[in-house]
Each structure stands twice: as structure tokens, then as C-alpha cells.
Image (cartoon, rainbow, N blue to C red; front, side, top):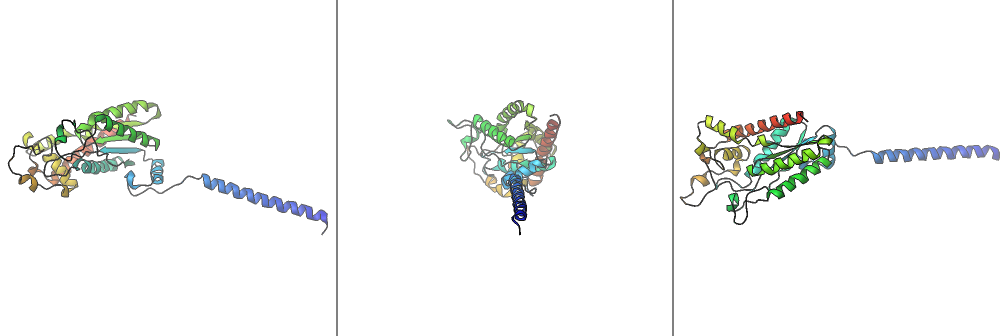
Amino acid sequence: MPRTLLQPLHRFAFCKFALAGLAGVAAALAISQRPLTAPLPDTIEIADMSWVEVRSAVAHGYTTVIVPSGGIEQNGPHMILGKHDLIARFAARRIAAQLGKTLVTPVIPFVPEGDYDPPQGHLRFAGTIGVSEQAFAGVLDGVARSLKAGGFKTICFIADHGGSLKPQAEVAAQLSKEWAQEGIRVIGVSDYYADEAQTEFLKREGETLALIGRHAGIADTSELMAVYPQGVDLSRFANIPFTLESNGVSGDPMRASADRGRALIDIKVQAAVRQIKALAAGM
């Protein structure tokens, strides 16, 4: 074949090869820049999800997150130290389910419990683990900033321990103010701690304030019986010998029941859901 005919053919083949190469490079770049995706998981607990699943959930509108806190403290001779953690985790999942498109972080177990030296409050009893209000506030602050970085828009602090309410409210208010222009709200869900409403419920059930008590009595014991019955052994309270030593109980836990616990937790859950919806709607 004449040389003059070969040259166009060679040029055509080279151009075809070059175009194919460029197409391959473009395809590779497109694939490499495609973000990782994952289907929505069958859990709402962040700790049980991969980071890709969390990102996908946020992209699908799961931009509300609950940060529950509990506490490791004495609860009389008849209940385990982790009572608050177990109740907080159970209630947080219930609240998230009612809100919809809401995820839940692990429970923060270390909360303010009083002074160390000399020990005061629950710290007078072996096994109680407390941190300062400043330390607890710092944890809440760091958790919220982490969740904001992950794309969450409504961050809800929910404390099952009364001593956590003050620092929780302060951190929520400060961060909400700091992030107001970004449309991010941090809510200290104070209504969850529905002590008065629970007391009124038990009074309607025929109980007196003395029998209800303030700690490890009817309400606390009933709630743990509802969510983790193996954490309660009332025989340990019934069989304690007479002693002047404090047993850490206020009220009569022998009058507790799982049925009452379910009703008491529902009071807290419904109060929290109402507050979160009301505040989120006003953003």
C-alpha cells in the first residue's frame, strides 16, 4: 500500500486510541470522586452504625440526634449502679422513635455526683463515680461539636440524673447562641426530668410523698423493673438488718412494679417529645 495511504490510517488509529484512553481516564476520575454510600441501617443507635451509614442517614433527613446521659451512682442495696444509664438509653430510643428521623448516641455515664473530699451526696457510697460540672459540661460541648461536624442540625441533651440539668442547660444555651446563624439548635430537654408529673401520678395511685421518696424509692425502682428487671432484687432491701447506717434509699421501693415503671417512663418520654417538637418548630 502506498505510503501516502498509510499515514492517514495511522493517524486515525492513534486518535482512536487516544480518545479511548481519555474516556477511560474520565471514567476513572468520575468513579474515584463518587462518594461512598450505604442503605439506611435498621438501627437508630450511632454506635451500631458505620460512618458511611451515619452520613447516609443524615443525607436522608436524619438530622436530629439525642444525647442521653445517665450516671453511675448508688441506688440502695436493691438496685445496680447503672440504673440511670439503662433507663436513659431505653427512653432515648422511645423518644427518637416518636420524633422520627432521629438518631441516638451512646449514653454518657459520668455525671456530677457531688464533692469528693469529704465525699458528699451519692459519693458517700462505694461504687458511685462522679465528675465535676465543668468536666461534664466539657463532654457535652465536645459531643455537640462532633455531631455538628457530622451534619446534625438539632442536638438534644437528655439527662436522667437531676444533678446534670444545670450544666446541660448552660451548654445548650451557649451553643445554640453560638450556632444560631447556622440554623443549628442545641436543646437541653429539661421537661424529660418530669419529677412533679411522676409524683402526681403516684399520688393518684394512692401513694404518699413519704412512700414515694426522692431516690431509689417507688419511681426509680419501678422504672428499672420495667426496662431491666434483672437489675432489681427487692429481697436485698426487705432483708436488710436494722442499722443506723444509711442505705441510700428514700421512700419504699417495695411498692414498685414494672407496670408503674412503664407508665412513669411514658410520662418522661411524652414530656420530652412535646418539648423537642415545640422548640424545633420555633427554630
